[in-house]
Image 1 (cartoon, rainbow, N blue to C red):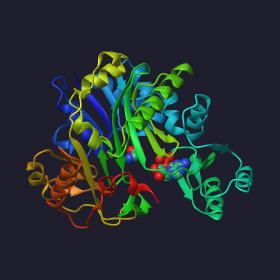
Image 2: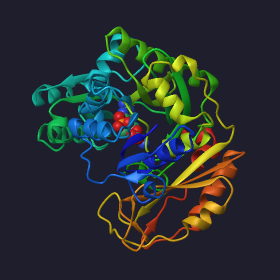
Image 3: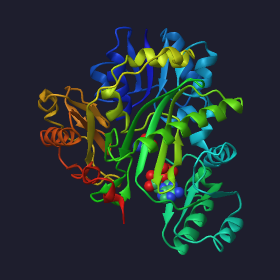
Image 4: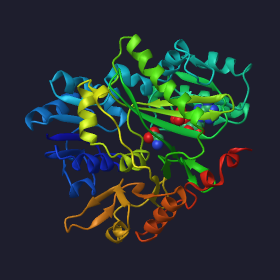
Length: 429
Ligand code: AMP
Ligand code: GLY
């Protein structure tokens, strides 16, 4: 079966690596793709992945059997709907279901109606009403732009004036249309943990827990990034918490079905493990990036079969098998990220790093030049993933491999997974 994957980051490289391993995979097209996907698939740099008709037409013209949608923007824009309408299988939810990530108010209302544990909240379309609410609800408090803001629309305000400024900047247009509605939320504490599931709207198959490191600096300091490193599974989660997270995901899918919305694809629950149990911070309607880079290397079931079964609503026929190993991934970024940084630096050492057992280097922001040299082409450049029989072994190996790779301005966090090694008490303040 020929496949079209939409996206061009580390997540998509990981998806393509796993799909290409399937005996049923034919040609894999990736739009736009990157330097890593170019080596194992056919990049399609010119396809506008937000243009539903263009994507559906490309798939029809090239006899693509399955379209896999990586990022949230095409999902929210309804690309999955158009591809389904064209009679082609698609892995990823329709626009209605994608509201779970596309509108925080939609997600909060659904959680409230179906008693899914989440922070208490209020939603506003009026700036003065929001500011008025802050006169009775004090910091620490969390202000969120309702719509998609590329991960930047959440302000955790530790002081009242920060919360007020956040409300003003949302309504002032800082996040464009995404900020014309604002959610103000109760401040929660605890370790964060993500749980991703495959679902076809009936069956929910949990993947694994994962924990990202969003801040640029060591010790979780500095500005927010797309993610500087990740591990899976999360060792500090208790069995009871895991069950509660699975239950929350099942309830969410049942809730959508009850509302007449069918969800087919990956559902990502971002949780905070509070003293009252896990509570949902956010939903994503897609695989996480970089979470995918530690989850898929542990999946032993054929990913293509799982995706086709999801698209055909036959997920109940699938059993997932996972490697018992631990996975840790370290992001190698361009110096300056998430601020401004340089591109076009020559990357060396990937081949040597991949000679180590259980090491895979996923490309997040790379490209090949005319001479076939691999160059940096983004803020996050590479995700160096290692598996190990213990958490510590995976971590050591990921850092050993990272040290073998070089490019000018290379930046990495050296404490990925360090807190988890110290145990649950490392989260207590
Ligand atoms: P989100 O994009 O909703 O995951 O939010 C980004 C980050 O903001 C999360 O990973 C948390 O660290 C933090 N955050 C979001 N909501 C809350 C909350 N209610 N209480 C405390 N921190 C939060
Ligand atoms: N790593 C968080 C996300 O994919 O949204």
